[in-house]
Image (cartoon, rainbow, N blue to C red; front, side, top):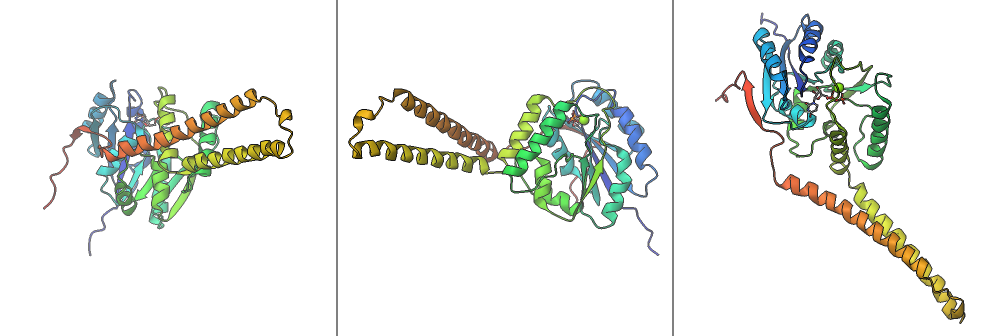
Length: 321
Ligand code: UDP
Ligand code: MG
């Protein structure tokens, strides 16, 4: 009889300046997965950390044979770091999770049993929780409401970058070459049999969020402008609206001429000025939206890699012949 081999699982964990968190996280992770009948590879992606994280990761790799470390040459951002991990995934199942303890590893057994039951994508959804600051909750709610209004793919509100993907789903994701990556949208786009697992998000193990307001804004921009053309259409609708307004005004003015009441026509400097400003402003905004899309196209056509790797431990296997 053929020996039963365990299915393989890649765990992908992007970390950026998580010194003092990774060792606690790793212990939590081991506790959750050690007893499971799967062969795990634990891949930490160091997203250009400038603190003691690289040393801590090296120590983990020394102590635990399942640990691999990919080091990016600078801080490329969470989505790029996740992509670096996904590009190296080579297992039956791949799970991505944050390295700060906010994606509880205790959920992994459940995700794997859902995968065994035939689901190819297991998404997780943050439950409303008091652990989240009101600012994060408000911006997140607004973000998903806006996104699902303008986007064509339906993206799960409160969705986290904590998910399981089958081998085929990982391959599908890898075939999307875009530079501006919003993985939550990309995963929604690829389809596959999907199930949603809600979870209560605990507080960070330590340290503070690495998602600055700037990084959050950039992610939101990527989500809107690489997943939707609606802002462009909005510009057109607005233009049509103003054109109709102008037409109505012309008819109104004409009515004075027809009835010979031109004396009643007010000199109208203020209304003219008002219209000029409104139309000018609308034009500028629309032009700005078009400009943003051109900028995105510009960055896409450069075909730059999403991230650059400085080192990989252990070194990747030579391509098999
Ligand atoms: N992270 C990263 N690169 C970045 C920012 C964050 O790899 O530029 C990692 C971070 O170390 C953590 C995960 O992505 O493991 C989620 O980030 P964080 O917890 O700071 O975000 P939040 O949970 O506050 O949204
Ligand atoms: Mg976090």
